[in-house]
Amino acid sequence: MDANIQEKVREYWQERASKYSGGNASTTDDVWLREAEISAAIETLRDLPLPRNAQALDVGCGDGYSTLRIAQSFPCFMFLGIDYSEGMIRIARQRQESERELGSRTSFALGDVTNLEPACGDRFYDLVLSDRCLINLGSIEKQRDAIAQIARHTRPGAFYVAIENFVEGHDNMNAARSSVGLAPIPVRWHNQYFREEDFADAAARFFEVIHIKDFSSSYYFATRVIYAAMCRMRGETPDYHHEIHQLAVKLPWIGQFSPVRMAVMRRK
Image (cartoon, rainbow, N blue to C red; front, side, top):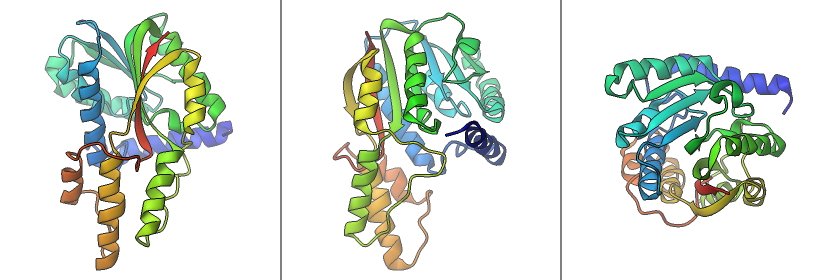
């Protein structure tokens, strides 16, 4: 992806920040997917041997909604959220001001995952998070560079929890859709999904992969396959606010029918 296209991606997120300011749909129209991501992140972090006063970095934090929700569940953690969209950071700071009890231990700053030093200086973190961040980089080379940047600011033995999109789960979802007569869902123009092999190779230089969680598989199967097929039968347009999304968040994690996966890794 050349510089002009990368700037268009940034403008896309700027426009979403302006359009959805004050709501929780700025980073995805599927607000219940966002709830699934937050719940899975909180559950995962509770199981990790993190220090009581952990220093956490959320790269590509968007409007800060997820960062602040996670911070509420870990009252001794310090969080820095960074994003390269000025509009998103503006919303994040507004959210922070309304959450006064979080103000002393959360902060937000402009930052670029491909060059973290201006935002992070020489600091190291006990926990780094990314949530559909690296998929906005236009090539595996840029994604590799971003993972190297994250590793540079992760303490040895500390953790990187990445929620990113993968081709294999996306293909499985579309195969299931095809089985009930639905058209495939394309990868959006501004996204570069990982192939499992490429992600593992890029991460292996710096991290030990503890496990991969297909936390949104059942959610995607329920909403993108079953609900979508029902809408097609009824001649209806799928609605992200339909109750099935809220219910699907609570389903057990089964299969691999979602592009959105979580990789839990420890810094070497």
